[in-house]
Length: 277
Image (cartoon, helix red, strand yellow):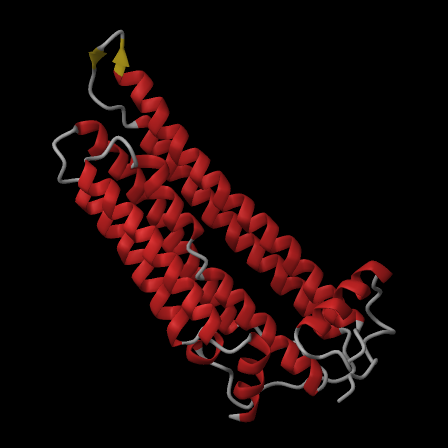
């Protein structure tokens, strides 16, 4: 199965980008396919958008920790405790809104590059029925994402029942962070499902589904959901909460490994989705 080269005359691509596209094809059991400028351009923008998205999530963790540290410094001067300040929470909420806007702009950037690549094609193909969330994300990954988010939410709500006001304040900071992560993931999944297909033949159509599957699985990465409770509350919360948070992370790692081992690779999922059309 060979890809056509109709997009080569319209979409310039650097040799480095073409080499990366070729390596991507080899990793996805498509070694007999020649990389095209279309694929190189789509993979390039996704690499950059994924890097920017990961940096935004890291910024969220740092900002949440900074908001908590600022409140503790402001409320404990020379051993005298004062009421908790609302400004750190407000600043964190504004930052979360800004990060959600930035994520939307990243998705818009990816879509704009896809649209520009699609215009350059001499012909376009698409799925008779667009693949839904079951085909793109899959039940195991979807269940894992929901359970992980609910587990982090339970940890945050349980910390609100502690009498220590500092722990309760940290739990509120955690809830703000979880809200940003949850809304961002939901918006990105919706964007993946409604994003137009950009393909010129069967090979590029398979690659389109593979990229959707990989982007969707990236959404379920629980790094931030594991990190936020530990960074904000571990050590200052009661012992039972610390044990619960460690169990949450350990069980999550085990479940994540099992799902990755037992779930077919993205190219197999893509071919199954195409054969079902």
